[in-house]
Length: 98
Ligand SMILES: [Zn+2]
Image 1 (spheres, rainbow, N blue to C red):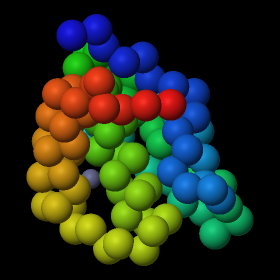
Image 2 (cartoon, helix red, strand yellow):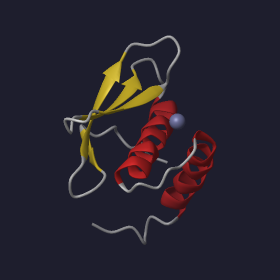
Image 3 (cartoon, helix red, strand yellow):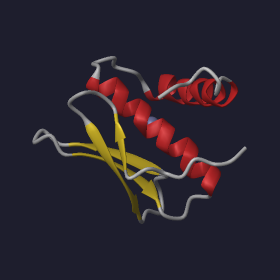
């Protein structure tokens, strides 16, 4: 499986695009910034492997989806959806379209 390179931005909704940046952290793989001013950012630990980066980006994007669409997912639900969506995306490529 060819890995997805982390994009510079991910679009979550018509109103919200999240800038994707690397950051230094000893404790976090990633985090999401949702400022009341509208500033949106997904931060990925600069020391992640390619595989970890892919999973972490998807994880943080799910937090963004939960926030932007007012879903209210818990951390536990995000972790389960992260696994489910990763499987779904990788196993249904012929169905995903532009
Ligand atoms: Zn999380």
